[in-house]
Length: 303
Image (cartoon, rainbow, N blue to C red):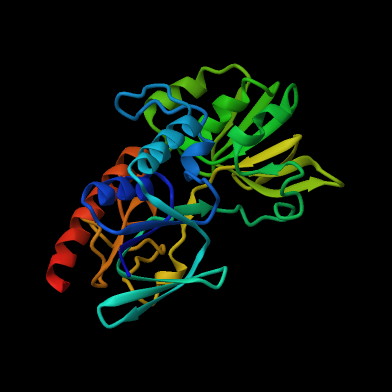
């Protein structure tokens, strides 16, 4: 029987692990991907984590993990597929058939990429359609690319791609971006980035790979030749296995404040999967620490 099972090994989960070890609690981290560190590993550069300005996202994630490992954190590879309540405790079933018993759960699985849901997107995924510019930008040297989205990720992707591609179309359905002002100014000053506002990709075209996109701008459709399409239109919370146990909002995010306390006793939530205004590494790390404190308080009451 564990005191805490931490589901997810991104910054929120690893922060929980560090604080759980320091508190002397019997804890384990369940990770879907072997030696995973979450979506931070896909970031080329992190400029907003205090004290580590300009750190590569992969390296920062590795530092988080090494910190947790150095304290003796136990890791189990597997995907949690079901969480069941047993009196005051919980059973967690993994996709490999194993199960874990625990007094509390810290759920820190984050989100997954939202899809455009247009014709050609699924067909050309991996053949010109990508959801990770950090992973694939180098494949588009001297080619033409398009980025769909208007937040920090989309503009960051456009800036990164501009270093490789000869042309980048930044396509956003609204009349202004949601990204931070500094990033907006940076992208607006990049000569090979063309910004298309009030525009949407309606179709991705090609034979064996992406060859063009059909773009709707204020009701008028235009075909633009591109070699690759990078989708950065937000994320969907990975909250499905908890939907019958905890309260979620209309978008599927688990309802909780900074203390991570959910509507279910003994289940705490950290990171991007919870309701919050700012989803960044620094807030995920804070969530992880707060969840352990909340779990400690709960454990004192039931033991």
